[in-house]
Length: 241
Image 1 (cartoon, rainbow, N blue to C red):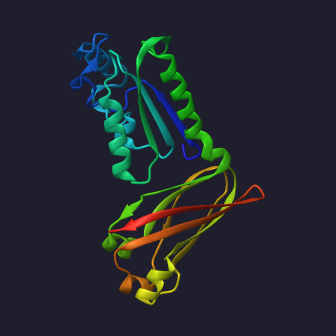
Image 2 (cartoon, rainbow, N blue to C red; image 1 turned 90 degrees about the vertical axis):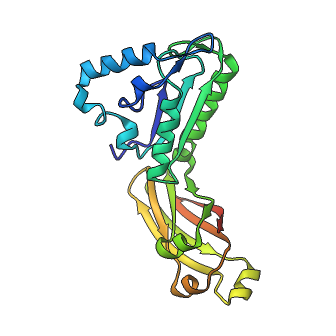
Image 3 (spheres, one colour; image 1 turned 30 degrees about the vertical axis):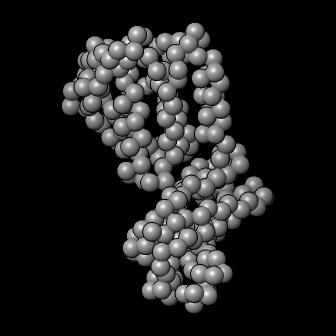
């Protein structure tokens, strides 16, 4: 669903192909794969053994921003379901937003087991962080990139618009680097737009002179977003290594 902007998984399985091989955590802290195996068998009955990968978010990828939370003593869903999902998301897109959270044990009823009141408060705060860019807009970019990759494909970033928006982006150098390399302050620029709220990718490619002369340094990504009649500016420093 391209219009889907955020996903919150509360102790849901992400990869049915690995569920039966992973251990969950019982209330006493000991590992057990009894319930993961039972849940896996249920999904085989529901979807068929040959469709386990095709209905697994970790295998298909999710373009939306994701918050994945599991209780520390969830006996049925292994913590590895969250960590492996996060790894698969970021392997597809280094700028993907995926927040994993393990809620401490307690006495407040939650999904499958009880969790600590403080952990639940922190979970709700993470929900706000998840959805905040949809209200205010946002920018996500890798804070480190290899010089060879920057020269070859440019800098990739994700921007989130709270509504229809126009975006302009540029890469800039500090004054000292400009003088040293004899380059202009702006070494790359790009424009993009979205017709509605959501997240899209943006690639800012170096100009010809910068591709030849740029060395290891720090560049600044500046993104200006115009949406709903308001103009916002986002900046991020990226280390070129």
